Length: 312
Image 1: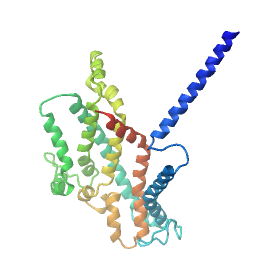
Image 2 (image 1 turned 45 degrees about the vertical axis):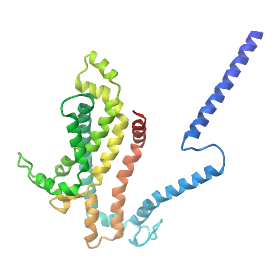
Image 3 (image 1 turned 90 degrees about the vertical axis):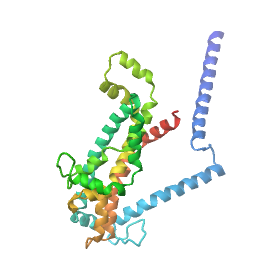
Image 4 (image 1 turned 45 degrees about the horizontal axis):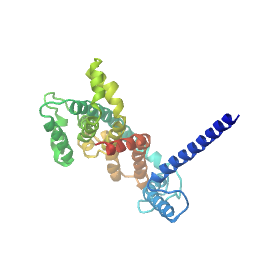
């Protein structure tokens, strides 16, 4: 009987200790998040005020665009957080001016360009990070060099190349490929993925090679699943880079019908009948896809940044 009582007491003690340990762990996690401490104190009040101010700074411009996009009396000089005359007139006017066609052009270009960019970045990074060959440093330097050249410097040569692809006689102007192919290779994506792949443990790859795993299966089944965090980073930044293109879609277009939404927003200002409300409605359409892609890939972005910060 005494033995049973002692065992029950021991279990209760162990349970209490476990609960205290879990509480400490939770409390420790809470303490480690941006320096927050439990309780109502002056430090937390100041932090809450700063967070609210930061939210206002980033949220107010979005609210202004949202309210003006559905305001029948929108003005470029007025700042409104709520439409004074709620209306869908700006939507109908945007449809009449072909804004949704420009939006479709942007989706086609960003979809094809981002897909090619990720595929090329994965294949190139695997070769640069997991293999050694002569001229490796030169290749990396060339990729980095492409990031250092402003678009204005390569605009004229790029326009000539798009108009007459060397050795083929193809004219890509007026087609989505005139924008998709130039953005398919981006030095930033290749550089980020290469540095991430270099830090992957070589023992896993060596064990797979002993089992007779080939290069493509090695990349697809072993290396790529470990690169999910950096894939999120590459996807977000690649999407933003292609979506925000202005000069390239402009020089690759044959007519205004070939413009992307980013270019069309600038051109619509000179179109008779397009007021500030229509321009702001187009700006809202241009903002929503970027916001959606960021919200969907937010966790991957945080994991990728955290993984890059802790490696090495």
